[in-house]
Length: 327
Image 1 (cartoon, rainbow, N blue to C red):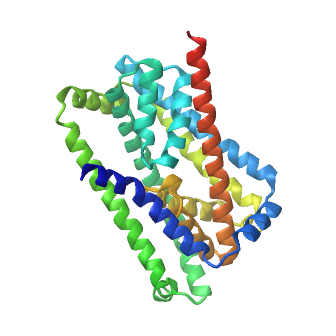
Image 2 (image 1 turned 90 degrees about the vertical axis):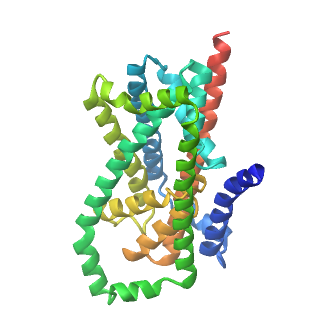
Image 3 (image 1 turned 60 degrees about the horizontal axis):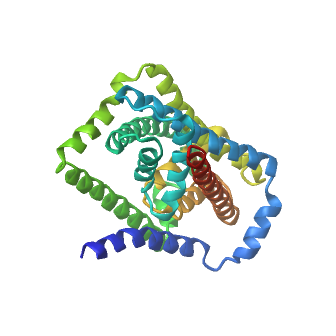
């Protein structure tokens, strides 16, 4: 039974991803769509976007080191950065395994306590969640008047907008919500199991409380803000790589970014499926035709996923080289 549940936990995210992507791209000539996408891309802007895909991960590694230092754990910057790279790539194979992977990598390569480092990861997730909610609230409030004007001038109201959702669209939204709810219950179940081992739980709680002992909290906060600014620029600069999204303003882009970030909470590989659906829907809401909106979601997500894979490969190769050089 346990093996069957483990199988379901691993297979459901991929099945959800495949189902949403099939529904979005059904009847679409993907070869033509991809070839058209590559012909339209302004690679200068896309390259600049990819640079800001790397910067937040480096900031995340530096912030992680700061949280570990009060616990007597001195993780090298190089190993911490490689561990972050590997963790994001690992999440493409098994969603949400990244946190465990990076803590395991740090223990194996730098001797850092696994339970303490996992506690610091939980604390930084709490900080990220608060920042994300504040950014999302600001983005929504800043765009509320424009959204209402847009709905009025295009003849939409809330009921009309709801009717534009096909039955399949409602099912996809409900399925994403149920999957996210199931994932949250799974996390609570795992935390309950952790309480069975007092020593590990104590280290875990110590890791969570490490933020109170950070030497330069202003720098920790600065890294945290830099992470989210970097994530946003990673997404926003890609708008200028396509002619049909280059005119979208920074505040609408921020709202689309927030909606996409919440969609990624559904545990699928790199948010594939829910992210495509959320970003495409928001782009259409801001006046982009459906076909270009689908093209943008497909191309940007594919290129960003390729970057994650390359960084993961780099991190793994660098750690192998590092450990070999120490022998």
